[in-house]
Length: 112
Image (tube, rainbow, N blue to C red; front, side, top):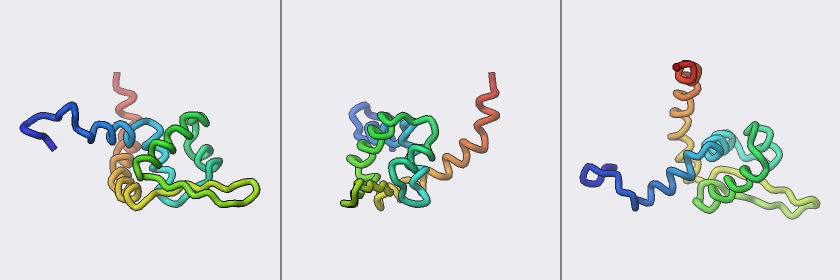
């Protein structure tokens, strides 16, 4: 990971890291980790996310190839979101970190 002992500013990993580890990005990936969800289901699962932030986050994750969006031609249209194979691979690695965070969050937040 370190190129000559440095973390270069121009490394594309910074862009991916920003997208994946954004507050809502992580939560959306975790929400989709067990199964695909519709828009409303995602909104209820990821409590506190605004419509604007959910839409922006989903667009970013879809553009990065981590989330797949499927539109069914019904009336009204049905839109489903699911992890792509790349997103599933990432989430499988992300879940242990999230488990660690949940396990230690109270103690970390309580520290002055």
